[in-house]
Length: 265
Image: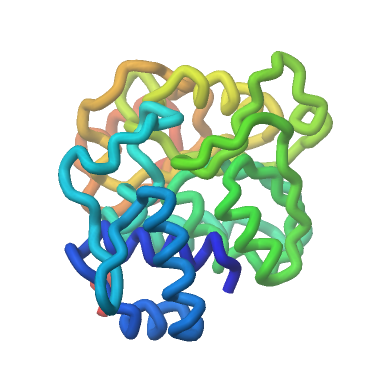
């Protein structure tokens, strides 16, 4: 397992519970105790957790007050929220992909869950998600393409500051799978204008635009519109999505797939 993937798991576990032990992390990652201890030390030095005897603990309140590179919630803070729904949505989305086709996937915790389901499909994948790119490089046989730009550590995304990005402009896909901060009558909502600028470039490069949003994304939040509903071809959500919201999407001409979520053991 790659170091970044181990760090993702460690931070996710620390976010979920106050203290996590080395033994628990060894079981989750399959890494040695020595490797996990080095990882904890590195994350402690970066100010992302506190190293304690036998493991690590979450930072409290304002202790981790380093500058956030984006205004949207950090990847690690969101990864475990509604995880079963995100996995079910990703599984359904992957079934739309034919072997060997080209797709675009934006960064996010739901789209990251696509990894295990598309890894063996020999796809050509353009993504601005470092986590998804690393997963696909280390697993399966997809060809991975990254756009140019700046790396934002908290979101683990490549965000291009350039008006013209030749990588994106020369990549044409059958489908663009994207997550969002929220979805409402006005369209897909994002939390940061830098993200919107980067992802609007990718919107133009796919035949179909498919939003992957769990039921919590229908709550009112954010005010920056990534794209109107008229640009969406399909929305895949879970059974916790409000019926009136699904009806609103269908009235706008959007195909809505609702997946059932099985409780995870």
